[in-house]
Length: 362
View (tube, rainbow, N blue to C red):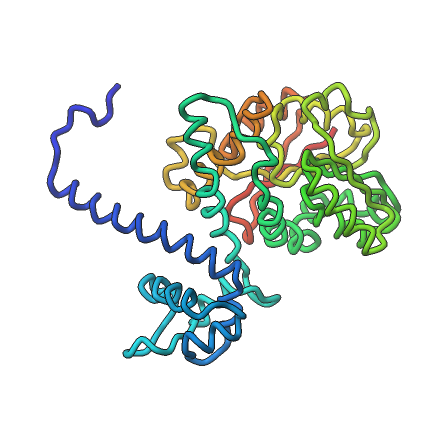
């Protein structure tokens, strides 16, 4: 059924969408400018300071004043930064500083705008994929693990002990006494390293496709003296066959399963590698598999965009299924059931509007 093809053009609707389109253009440019402000430390240099000149702000940040001044123009026009009537002194309001500046006491969402700039970096190659099919390989995203590490700190690492582990309370005694833990798609390993430090009697293993991420995690583990953590660069496409049977008591996957070439085989491998009574804990994007049910999703456009420009395409580059980030709860449950997980519990957490948390036991 055609939803809109035979409807007459309504001038009021056209004008309304025209207004929205202008807003989209402004917000798109603003997102890029916000990313620049975060990466260059400009928000940090302005947070908590009284109104200052562009010269003073540039000096505090160690940046070129001319670029800082133009950036401030975008911030003022976008309602992010306040300025005086003469346009000579600028201040970052406390509410903006709370969300955009890097501070142990802040909510720390400034890093999210980097996802927008990352999509822009890959646009030409994505257009080619639209025309010819295929995908863009993992290694074509050199900053992905850096940005994901910041994301993971906010949703996973900082929440690990107070919010995430309480969802699997029966695993805590084992972690204290000593069990074997695997993190699938560990990235730079921040979550696993935090666990390794907190539970020195347990043994922790991290797998990820990225050699760069694994090298980084291995170096950090050595620097911190965490001899109970090891990391391995590994393609898990055949994990249903290559997973060591009954090797682990607890397996985690934080925002990683949907990126895999073959999530079905990875999940089957996780089921295979768990010992009887073992637990699988999975964080993945909270959405419906029915696109129509995601129309009111608070991050829908961003997540579909990231899926198109990263999650889906890296899977397709490996000849994979290309499920994408928005594969949704219904598909997740089907894949988990096919892998052998007949008992699935799904949770949401107040600190994380983006993800669902699934607990499965073998």
